[in-house]
Structures are given as C-alpha cells and as structure tokens.
Amino acid sequence: MTSLIRKISHWKLRTRTLELGRRTLVMGIINITPDSFSDGGLFLNPAAAVAHALRLLDEGADLIDLGAESTRPGSRTGNAAEAAVSADEEQARLLPVIEGVLAARPDAVISADTYKSATARAALDGGAEIINDVSGFSWDSKLAMVCAEYRCGVVLMHTRGRPDEWQSQAKLPADTLIETVRSGLSKSFEVATHAGIAPESIVLDPGYGFGKKYDENYILLARQAELLALCRPLLAGVSRKSFLGHALSPLHAGTPAPVEAREIGGIAALVAAILHGASIVRVHVVRPAAEAARIADAVLAAR
Image (cartoon, rainbow, N blue to C red; front, side, top):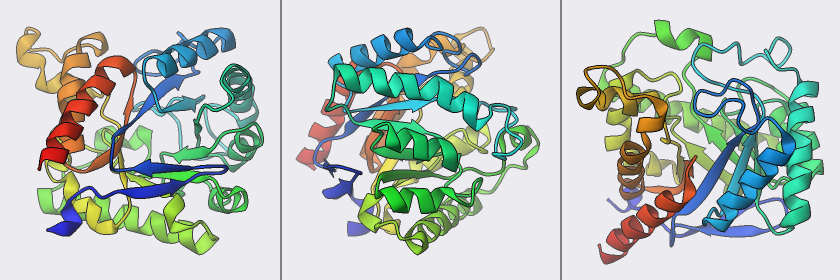
C-alpha cells in the first residue's frame, strides 16, 4: 500500500528545485488564446495576461501555467506542422507574457503549456522553468531533446488520441482505462529518460478530459492513486472540465452546467484528486483552490 500514498519528493526545474508532497502546490492557468473553452479571449492581450498572472500569484499560486494554443475538444491540434496555431504565432502570444511576469516578479515559477519544440526552446530562453506537454512527448519528436538540453522541469500528460478524435472514441472498461493511462504515462516517462531528462525533473498528469468519456474521468479520479506506482508525483487538472458539467446537470434543468457554474464542483474534484495522490493542482481560480488544498493537506497529514 505504500506505493499508493503521496510521498515527499523534489521536482528539479531549470534553475531551482521545488518540494512536492508536503503541501499541495497550486498552478494557476492563463490561456493566451481567443478560443479556449473556459476563458478564450479574456487574456489574449499581453498586458491583461500579465496582470492576471500577478493576481493569481497574489492569491496564492505557486506556479503559473501559460498556454497560447487551445487544446479544447475538437480543435485541430497535435501535429506541429499542421496545427491551427503556428509556432511563430504561439510564441508571439506567449513570450511577451513570460517577459512581463518575470519583469514584475523575477522569482515567479512559469510553466509553458506547449507541445512544440520550437516554442519550448523560446519559452525556456525567456525564463520558463517548466514545459507542460499535453501529449506526453508524442506530438513533436524533438521536444524531449529540447527539455533535456535545458534541464527544465516537465509535466507529461496522458492524452488518448487527438482533440478532433475524442468524440468518436469508444468507452473503455474501467480496468482497461486505468491500464491505458498507466501504460501511456510509463511510455512518456521512458521517452523522457531515454532523451536524458532526469527522473526527478518529471511530473505525470493523468489528463482529465483529454480523450476520456465523461464518466471515465470519475473512474480515473477514484483510482488515481494507482498511478503513484509509477513512482513520480502527480499533477491533476480538473478545473472547469466538461465532465463536471455533466455530473451537475440535474441541478441545471437536465443540461450540463456551463463553464461559469463549475467552480464549486471543480473544488470537490480537486480535493478528491489531492486525497488520491495529486501533489500539484492546476486551476483557473486560485484562492478557493488554495484554501481547499490546505484542508485536504491537513486530512492527509492527520492520516
């Protein structure tokens, strides 16, 4: 059973090391895009994105995750050569925000949410500490080598297929689902270490909402602790995901709850994720998430 308990470990980033496991770290999300499912367009302006990042840090965010290409369901994503957002456009959105945040808060820990090696290199040159790849090093063969070169922290997410394929995927039996996620993350870990990335630089993400049917996300959440057997810390991103909206539909006249009505449900899922082994949570609204994480951490400490 010891493998199913969150342990204290250290996450080696580009210029520093973070302790994981004693206290849940909160990663604040900023989408520098016109079309993200939750807040598309709100932070496309660099000044607005920088101001929001500073607010999230003031509210208790330990890390800021900046993404400049939407990976919402149905988007044309996954091939760097044919992506809806080119690497040049992605960098034009992303780099001014990295620069602005670090100018105001030089000690801020910034994660760049990208699967493109060219954008990752530019972000790391600009001061990012972490590359958060939703494809787990499966969409750009050069990305692992870039991360190894910079010795940065990495988040490797499990994604089943590409966003434009998710709606047509068959539902998996529970055991098959867990094994699919486990084996996918294990493969990503192997790609990373083979490229020369240190194991202590790697965090794994089960990929809630990424190629999982609505109820599959709850199976994954209930059994998330089984993934601790991979011996790496876990990051959980459940904030505002559509599976929350579907569970809340009885309270919304039988239709899925809209994005703006998923915050409390998201907090419930966040607490479940922490109690089932997550060391980092990725959220849109930081203050209530940070408070909920403190309570969940107190429960874990008491256990």
